[in-house]
Image (cartoon, rainbow, N blue to C red; front, side, top):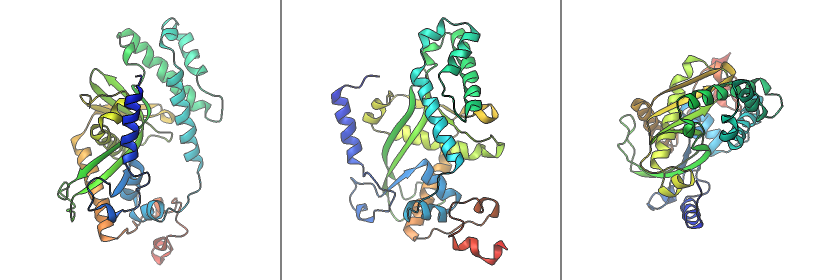
Length: 305
């Protein structure tokens, strides 16, 4: 969607009104309803849910972390898939037979250390295109959002969660980049790409991630929606995730209980700030792989020995 200058100016004004960096708790904003007290992203919320102490190291103390191979792979593959959709020519692909189409999809990816992943994605996209063509739905083949940045500010009520009652209402700033959002009519389907292997136990965490995206989309101001080609009447009805390493893609109806889990997670994070307590979780299999294992006091106790 082409955004005119007036819309661009409105979008910039909305974004500028949100604090540029609000991971830090901003109690000075508590009495000013126009300013958020905290920025929350899918990653920061997930980090606190995983281990409050890791959240403390990452987002409060802001300690640096070394880039791992998994992080590098995630960045490179995400960029490659973003470029794939930006460069894909539907009119050109429509004239190809199946073999030519697969070759075309493969040609849109770079040649680097992750070629095996790209070949799997190319095969999946060729199959999706053939299916969309057969069902006369080529207008829905490309994502309506391709690596889209979303910002939203919401009032989080003191009693919004049944698990954690807060001292007061808070304005919070939600922010995140959504990999892809596909459209079916006025229904939206966010789809998350992951570059690790699929395991069934990841279902719960994936649903929480997708519910966070749903909350962000449906809370975003009109200027942010327009910037991303969306409108207020569009709703997230389904969501899904794609693990090309395992050649696994799954789409399901959005789950209300997953949204409840996200609300509880936000309340838990705000409650931790109120109490000033970010206690570590104890689980050796995960702690031993943590970037902060060497400096975490909990990891140095006799209980690990």
